[in-house]
Image (cartoon, rainbow, N blue to C red; front, side, top):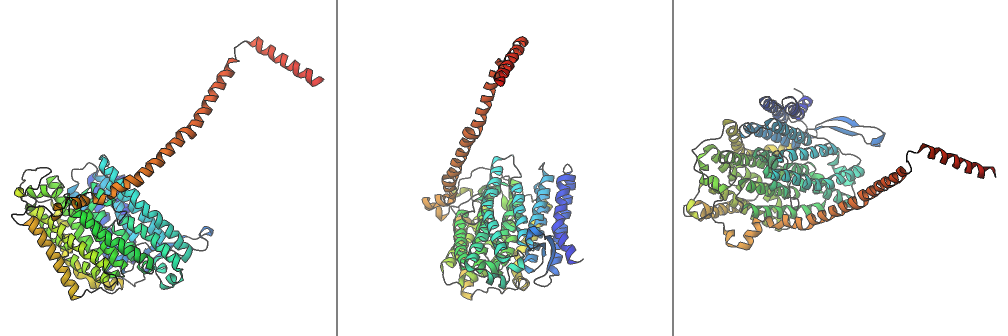
Length: 617
């Protein structure tokens, strides 16, 4: 099969299945599910075939899209860019989308909107794959926005729940804030470089030709889109709320693909973005602060999905820090490994929630969560990878990021990332111990009590993706050299001291979590709870949402009030006054129409006589 056909299959397969599920088989869920699995399976097979037969590093397939007087001599070429970066991320997206779809067969079995769900899942996969393989920045932006639309539909899938509808709106609006800046940057880039083709924009000649001030402005505007989509401070608060969607959606969108789109965009335009020293000086502190902030919030949460949501924000910040520090391989490698082990953790959480109907880790543990052996094994492996325990995948990729950031002159970002790594290992071990080592005598209050349930594993359709992702979370860490060869970028090798300190950091955090949550006499109370002010700060997510409501919320409310006043008093008021004047004048005119025909004729004759008299003088 030739490359063009494979690329078309990878991108259009999910689109066809979306149409079939939403239109043709909307009232026949089993056929809609079959169509979705077929389309996503074809996309995954094609993406893996493209990765296996990776061609030259600049291989692309272009077709003219706009070449007329309106394009001012700059024809827009849409098509597929099939270099190492795109092929790796495309294969990862397609495979995880397929695994999530298989998992969803069991998870959504009793949901009446199955056809709509699988259709939207296919829509998202089509948008994301088309974004990844795009050869043109404008083409990327089109599918970037479609990814946002599809995520809005999936987050708000249970739209009858006010919380889900509000979360979908919040995600859509907050990501649009960054997208506005990104679109302005796209326009400036087209104006300055005269092209939007990815390879040309990333070439050293194009970058050198851009004035430094213009380059800095473009890089910052593009980075605003990255901040919004990848949930970085200050546009990060939408991601935890987005957990209102179905758990498989959280696994797909908020760990492996949608939020990773921003990181992929940074990696895709890495030469252009790191050429701006201003962007590096801005991106590194934002990433380091976001990693630390989200880790502190995750360590006090009891909702297992919110723990993983804040963990995703923190790990995305690690990726951006590595990329901003010049570590293209480190950032992209962690993107791939994180996709596997975070999708695994979300799907494990979904299996617990599906069986126990609770998101509370304390409740799940006391109801017998550890008796779901396959799910618990996946939770331990995925948690170990997230914590950076060797030889799991997260250890290798996180070490590369620390090596890249450690090469900088300023030690502040590295210190922040080490502290975030400690907290990551701590809250991950806390999550595992609360589920697997419940202690009803600990005095930890349970928000709800569930009876002990007999051990019953999740359905096979849910267990199979867990098994595959568990193996991937172990094996992906050994793919570093293969990824380096595909993207033609050097690996970041940490020193022996850095490796030892990272292992010691993770071990110390796990030991602290064991002492507080794992041992038999554990109080299952965090050390932060002994500092009420700090605990309240973390529990309220640093009051950032409250600050937004008190500032931007009130500003928007005031502007809305002024707009309503203008509409009521000026627009509607003027129209109402004109209407009332018309009614009054009509009534006055009606009074002259009394139905006396003789009077009307006489009046007309008298008027004509007077007119003729004055005309004849």
